[in-house]
Image 1 (cartoon, rainbow, N blue to C red):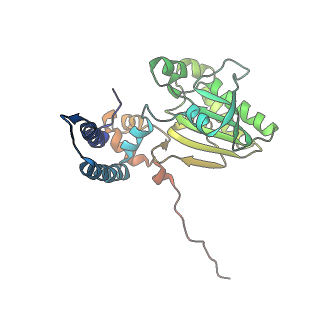
Image 2 (cartoon, one colour):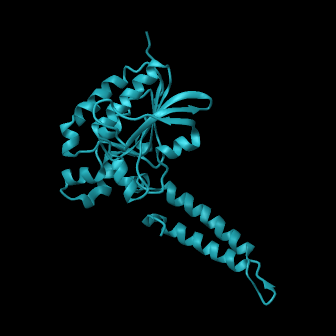
Image 3 (cartoon, rainbow, N blue to C red):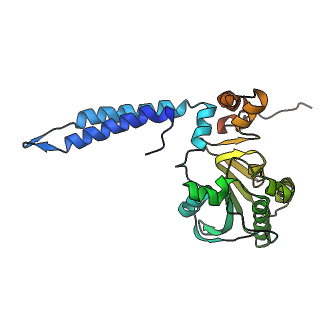
Length: 270
């Protein structure tokens, strides 16, 4: 069964009605062919208007739900569509390879680049393998190793951010999760090549910042970038995770909220 968000149901129901009319129109009964093109055309026009109305007026919490949609493209999907010759590199040279944070060489529009990003799974088995996109410290150490390699070979870096946050488990903390992220924050500012980061889904807390210190930061329309998840914020402020929609609105975590305003240039008279 397809995954459908509550606010998408009117759209899905109208799509199903259009599909039913098409199937009736193509069915011939006793030599009689039903011409339903006019009705279908009217419904398609109504569907287009409904889509614009629904998606234009999404609340902050609804955009968070869109950011977490299981059918949303992940890092490897973008790499497959935008790049060629991808060669994945592994390991932090200290402990292990982290499957929640992937990276490697690729070619983008004829230019050799380094691409790094969080990777989630499509099903339970893959999500367990990818740790639901929450990287361990070895993932962040791998990421900075690859960025420094890119600097050595003069390759621009693409970072795809999509994580609810860095993994908070005991093992991750014992292996220096906070130190690994802090080290990345410092060292990314020293990488001598351009870094472009794009929040393609969830941009949660230090887990996102660990690969988010960039020359340009982009946030997809239905993604979010926040110091804490709405549920975590609600649990702290109201002791009630059910207030996540209110927290999402207060956090100003959507792309329109985060876009800096354009101020007119300041002029000084002498």
